[in-house]
Length: 159
Image (cartoon, rainbow, N blue to C red; front, side):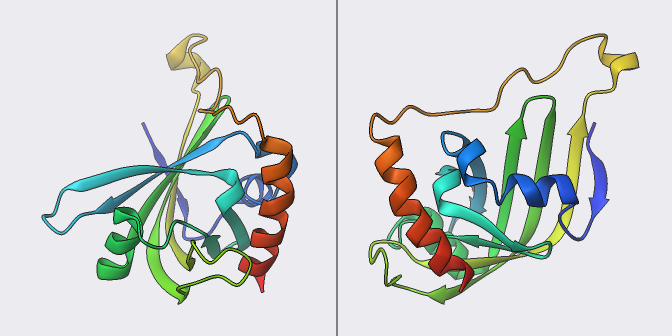
């Protein structure tokens, strides 16, 4: 069962969202609402997301994706960050800051204003040893090169 944390990122989650090296191969699940009112799930890599501060998360999604169009249209986003033994759910309002990023013109610069953070932590008494064993990850044979590119994008996101 999830528990309300508050209206800003807790320290642990803020650090997670700023640690590119530790999370480079991990996936962040997001959900927008499409034009017909349906949930629209998608994935971003940690190379496309960074916390600016404890109230704002910057995103660099593909500028012409359905997900980005949904965020532009209704300004809502839910983000799921899942890692070993913990899951966070972040809800907020999205604003487009720049349609074409200078460092990567195929992505847009968006800001998620954090409005609600919930968490699922393991309750050892109830779960009796059950927990999330690993975060969702992906494989990229060019990950080292992508990390170098991401540093430039993430720096621009924070400007």
